[in-house]
Length: 256
Image 1 (cartoon, rainbow, N blue to C red):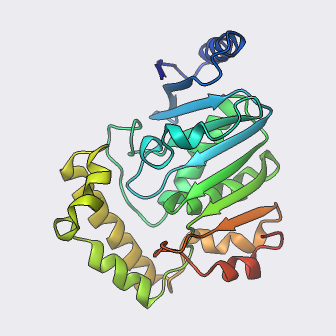
Image 2: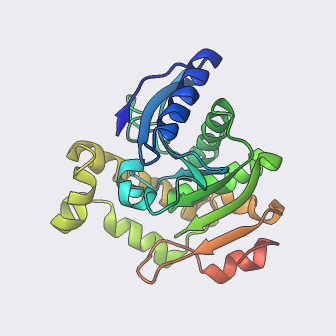
Image 3: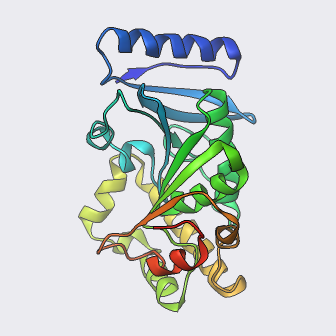
């Protein structure tokens, strides 16, 4: 991996792009470039893999980061000559710290602004967006706010609604001291325990607010019927926090 530091100016952007092209020309297409920039006075960390014509934006899940949710083996499964993948750490996660993340009902909607501006900054529009778990809700907002800039959308383990069963699961996960050691260790590889404990508690509180006060509908749920772009929804057999995949097919006009 290559660690660099960039500033949100056209000059820095051109230098970064030139570096990527030079590396690719020297048969170093497998290089994953990690860097940061400033968007709306906020430090945003991200990585770039590949140099292909198909531009993809990957968004991590709750209390995640791109190194956790999209590790190197995942990125290297893509042909770098076909794809250019940008993985963002939303504000308050991963390399987009400090400050730490402030969990709130509208957080994913706000994150979408940073996602779109990052892809514009990198001159990587139009693009397709992929979101995992919490990041899937952000991906919905990216598609809604980005309009013609977003070609297609992939939702992994997505949940835009929460029912009584789901709210109960989150309540049961609120205290990380009750987690199995192996489950917690996945997060501790990337964050201090205090961060994981607070962020999970705050995130579970937000889910409870959505269930108690908003009829179980996250803001992203209201965006879905307005999206006409091609969408793919994938759910694994062990995904516990997501909506019924059949629901998305009923509200997304162009969904598989």
